[in-house]
Amino acid sequence: MTNPPAPNLDGSDVRLAIVVARFNEHVTLRLLDGALAAADRHLAKSRDVFWVPGSFELSVVAMKAAKSGKYDAVVCLGAVVRHVTDHYLHVATQAAAGIARVALDTGVPCMFAVLTCDTDEQALERSSDQRNEGRNAVEAAIATVHTLRSI
Image (tube, rainbow, N blue to C red; front, side, top):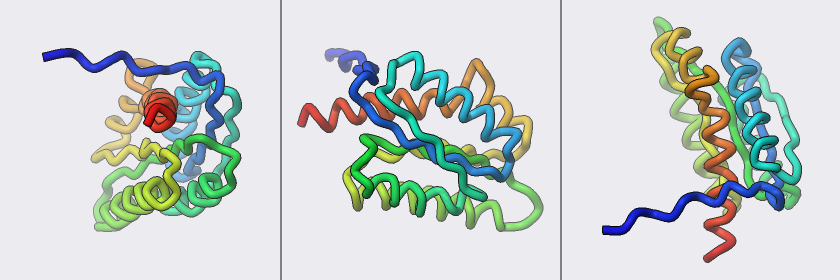
């Protein structure tokens, strides 16, 4: 059995759109910090940030960015925390479905970095410096762009 090759994280020719939900901003700002740090670390050619009210609205802006031809990948950042109603489930499910649809309909990689957590503590842990899903999403976006280009 052979190991997979290391991902190509050279972002010098990769243009990123980063779409961020304002809802649960205490978490999404941390995700954005991780995403921007990763874009800088991997020398992304460009990165534009777009804000939306909540995770439900991520997909419509992701679609506009993907169809614009200006971006090689779209990174969607949000945080949905479970509370006492089913609202959490509906928002998280539709955010995931919408972002997946954008990627499949446009062929532009759209990374799903919408935290779906039971508690604020879990969301803060997944947006921490040690385990920042915004950082992971940018790295996945760059690697996916290179994989698509190689096909």
